[in-house]
Amino acid sequence: HEALTALETTPVDLAILDIAMPRMTGLQAAREINRTHPNVRILILSMYDNEQYFFEALKAGASGYVLKSVADRDLLEACRATMRGEPFLYAGAVTALIRDYLHRSRQGGELPDNILTPREEEVLKLIAEGYSTREIAATLTISAKTVDRHRTNILAKLGLRDRLALTRYAIRAGLIEP
Image (tube, rainbow, N blue to C red; front, side):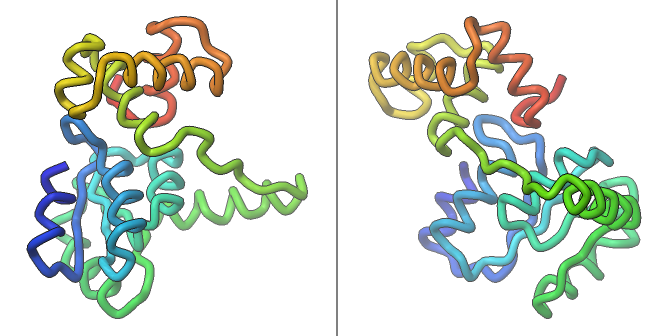
């Protein structure tokens, strides 16, 4: 959230975002930066060697995904590659991409787009983190009724029934850490 605010007044060429951040994940921030500042290149720095996070990062507009465990070795090269307009992927990510490509080509389908809006994702993340309706409203500077409306829409879109199911979904979708 702070990165998005800073982008309004600070010229930036490259944003390096962690997946796990308070209020808004790095993936959510990447989607918003990609939408509002399409010339800013994005790298995701993460401790998660997880295919789901990796694919979500690519869908969010990231140019690369760097594991914290090898950041001392890869981060500088990732920044250089990204600034040259080239993608940067760690070795396990390349394997995941190839496996996914082969699976999709056999199935003849594509990965579904995100069905939640960025605001719904933001509300879902806060719900899953245990925030009350009033706290979510204050954090996002919206009314409690708007929070309730978002929660109702999220439940309907995902076919879920309660806060616990939303929290499980948020963990699987990489919005919060388990």
